[in-house]
View 1: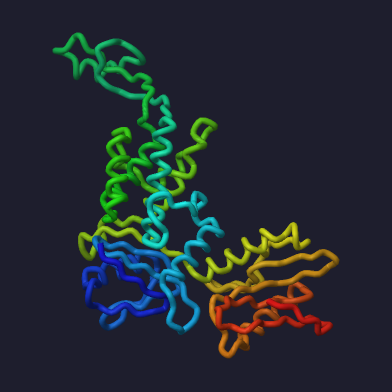
View 2: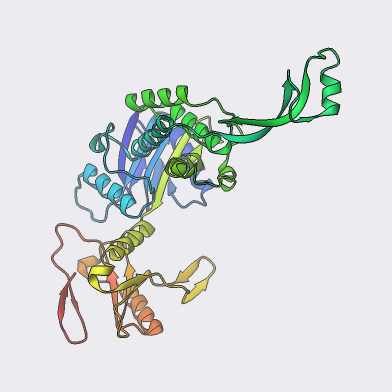
Length: 374
């Protein structure tokens, strides 16, 4: 398995590990997702504002977040991305304690796959649940409902058999079909020696249930009960694996799994979750707006969040995943936050940008010229 690390908004030219078959698979994936992920260039691709990981056959492409033009430690930015995914609960089962796959030596995909395999292994040790289901087959004892037409056609010679529809209590149910499907995807994709061995062990010990018909629609049919509630984390990870798996891109026979996140949305949700954590101590309440100020087609105008301090003091926060030029907000951003403040009658508006270690401290001035560090 070969790995390429690249930052968002960067170009990836053909050459080295990145071959034409990989480029064609990426372009097809991009087409299937409304051309959101990247743009085609003369001799490669240029990524947009999506971060995460794409695995195509034996090549892994790790797309990392980045907000400055300085030389950066890619492992450090990978840790930043993993922490943001943890706090935003993109995967509720996210676990910072890696018992077997070390964070520094793993790509994002391996972290997800390792979490899934450990979840399924834990379920097996606890004991997989069984459920009742109806089965129609030839059996040696009469039980359930005799299917007369089938019995006559199938058992003219074998008088000792009965073609019936009867109840069976076993592991063949939707939950296990979904997990089996995800296990098979992991087994066919991973090239990491530890994960391959772990996937092989889990696959061998998992019940041989039929999973060929599993799709994203299958998840809508699953309803967890008190006895199956402990499957929730494993099912969540399985849904991510299955929904992002492309077994055959039309431009070739490449197998692909892509886990990509919009960095603007991720930054907004990250700030929102951090503010929610400080609500009780800070004496405020943070919320999302319930209505749009303006919307035409795919374009809309809406602030990211409100902070309500009571006493009619409402602050509007709008997040921007970029570093403003010369530490000054653009005129477009200023007009946008001014419009929000005027429409929602807020006492203050904040444009919130990410910072770097090289940034000097920014100051916010309120109406009384009282300085507050950001």
